Length: 332
Image (cartoon, rainbow, N blue to C red; front, side):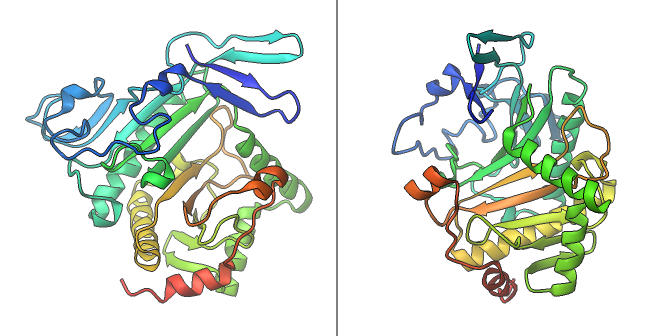
């Protein structure tokens, strides 16, 4: 069973999971590379993965067999386990708790060599719809406090398999990074009685200096103070505190905005490794006036070194205005 331990100085929780150490790529400087015949995520290799949770497939096909366009499976090497109760206990001045949660893999396509920029808009829409479907299901579990959706693209971004996929980890606590963002947004709202993200969207659309693309219901921007070069945020223009609050039609518009943004990054930066993360409200919270869900995309172009680790400062060699101007010039 995994466990969580709390840093007593800054209040950060760390997950310890022996299951993760069993991955073939763990502590290996040269990650595994699989062709389509060996890849566990490819069509025909369904028996190499855990039993699927949901799948989008031909009506005539059977679960855990070929005929699918998208599958969601439990992670074979989970950071957290579904089984068990959340048990929190002290050990002297230290706090620990059982590693209860969920860890799932969204296999985005049956095509081994396809990534999001190759897919049709409705294919990407289905990926985003699968995120929603899994989040709504897991939100019914009272043990869970936060659901993090993320994607690692490329070796340097932490992808252990080349086949396009994303992941979901549901945790029994609200992560510190998310809690800090929630607290900052709530402080702004208490002072100005407005959502800070809504105000950012209005100012960015007015200024036009950091806009990457504007897609009807969504806008992609370079944030004013990005930690990393070409860090990009995608935000819904209407106020929504949760990713699952979108209308059905908005998932297609989000897919179009995401594809446009990733294509610009791919062409401008020679297909960089990247991570994207969906930031949404915690499970236990209802719709919030002060928080606004969004997606953060971080290309892996620089390395975090001693000063950054020691101080918490980030040194970014590219201003967001320069990055936005460069991305807007890309011909798609």
